[in-house]
Image (cartoon, rainbow, N blue to C red; front, side, top):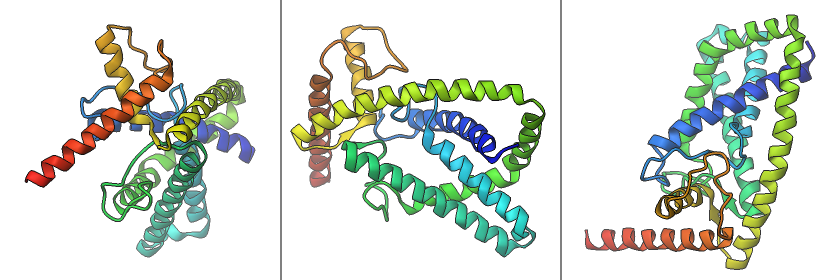
Length: 251
């Protein structure tokens, strides 16, 4: 099978799996979602997070390199392999975060409250999580990935499914970048950074108050102008920060 088709397949699987992982994390553990609602993660509309798709391709290439060089035969070699996975995933996370933050003025995640963070985009704690995830991938997923790739090589008709996915994904990315352009315009006018998860949580609350039907995949599609919701979300976030500051000053 060609390397391109292999990586396309892995991007497809990684993007879907990453979406599920982020969905669960934001539902139960995210501070930006204190009411624990189901919020569609990422900046895309559909059920995929491209960051994880790229990450799975990197993990596969590193694991394949480890298999070819025999690094996995020693504990030191495996430790080096997992360190490389953690560094690679952290680098992908930082580059993606910086691009969105600098070009679109949008923040998809915020680690600024965690120790050792860099620009609120990466931190040692999540780098450790990436290392653990890399180890879990190598021991529990990579062998099955190889079996799946062998199956795909014998069933190339499935490549049409991947082609369909990339067709829908391309349309989705174009639509999502259109929304990002609107968010960027607002951020430049107000001289702020838009925290996308806070905005989605605010829109969910606004729809509940207005008794409007909830949207899961098109959460940024609103009846009122999006700029109004952005200003309300910004005011709510500033009020929450003031409340936290007052609480700390009295404690």
